[in-house]
Image (cartoon, rainbow, N blue to C red; front, side):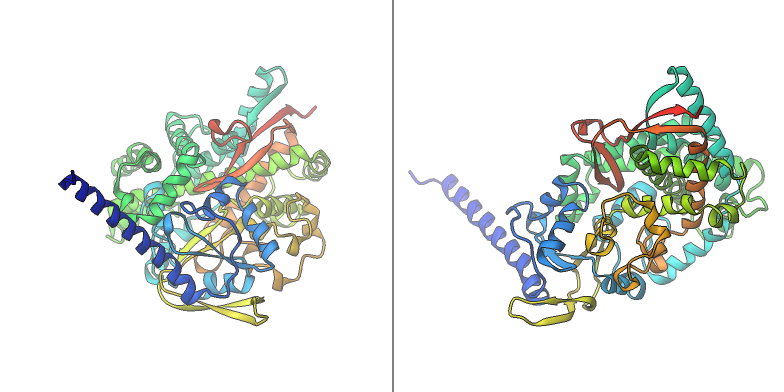
Length: 519
């Protein structure tokens, strides 16, 4: 007998089918209107589009394959969960147009901006709009100095020597974890007058532990699926999903620990003190009502994590590459061993050419921000340095994007393109001491890369970061030998670039090297 239940069930099926058709029509409408000549790779699933293919490979590898196969530095891919097609832009002129000329017309996407707020708070990396961004940047820029980096390097050396000695002279370590202890210590001392005890205080352990838990979830299949759901349904950003809770734990750990202690200490001393350190400037801005208490706390969170985690990843990747290339490690050791044990900023930046080349190469091959995801707020026309040849033989050197178009700039892929570098995947610092590829093939960012982004929203602390990595690296190379463990590493992403050992993915981010003391 035909019942009300049957009718209800059929109605539900019809409604679901109509909803799917509606989503599909929206998905293809944008591509038909704005992107008819942009090539698309084959394959892709109905549910996950091409994005699962991107996730399954090491970060950036799928894009490089598609750029090569389609003979184009601009492609479109099918978005997951029936979202509109996504434009992936590697063409240097189009990238410069977005990052330098129109950056405020391309804000962070609805999946990236909430993630920044959860991790780092509503601080410099979160704000959108030219006026607000300039206001926040002017608050913090003058405070960035390099006074205590050498002490952080010395503490890391002493701690690592003790660890290696206690393990019989040879130890296997997760190098990024050790590096993070030093970089966290540096940002604590120079920025906030806070002692993280060489990265071993209880505060440091809680902060680094929260970050590792977040990163461990981020590189998993569950992390990928959560990201896709957030892009398709942005309202889920307010739901207590496990991944989002882990991201928020990083900020909460800093707020509830060191940030509160810093504010309590300043109140005991009578408020902001004279000085140009970051905390003094932030407290002065707070006392004059330029920033709220929440903004103050968020600035502390951002600089503690962004100022330590990114530098430690670069340092870790540099050491891992040197462990796999012992001839290059020996060449670097020969350069730094006979140099001053306490070099000045100018000495480090100008008198150690191979150290400079090693750091540039580490940032090229392993950019810590592997991609940027932006969304156009209005219709725009992107120029192309490398025109696209359409299927009917036409050549186009510009293309339109509509308002709401998601644009991915795949920094990791751009940095490794064989069509530009010849041997893009190879770690070869010597390339920076030779003739580089023509500038019109390269981005316009620092050292012709996008390692620190580009334009008005580039990394505000990049000079400090480079100096920090160089000083710690030269200290470690002088005193230790690093050896390859044979582990196969796959680069993944969890807010930043994360190394994962193939076959041990459940362990989360880990970059192992063997280390011994230089005899």
